[in-house]
Amino acid sequence: MTKTALQDALPDLPEQFSIDELIERLLIVEKVKNGRRQYQAGKTITSSEVRERMNGASNLDRASLYRFIDHLRLCSNGIETVR
Image (cartoon, rainbow, N blue to C red; front, top):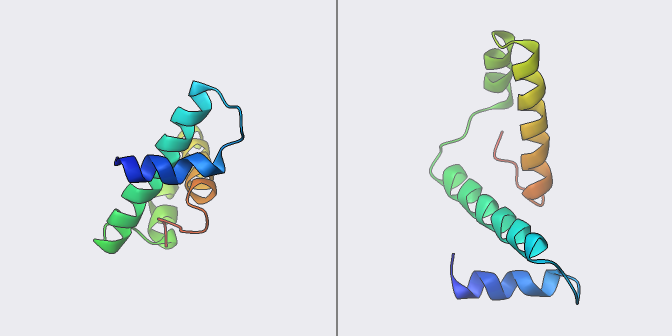
């Protein structure tokens, strides 16, 4: 992470915030940045590939995977790392 990335993240925070909120915001920014790099490098999988992998997964694994995909979609501000 760079100072510029930190400075870019600060205006999105409320006037008063906790250290935990700042860390969460910075983690999200970093995850989105990593997701974009992976996407640009072609290191993503299609939705159908995810479904194929899930067919062999247990119900618990499937539920965790769905939550993870939803998390990625929410954190990416419209940029999906799963095509």
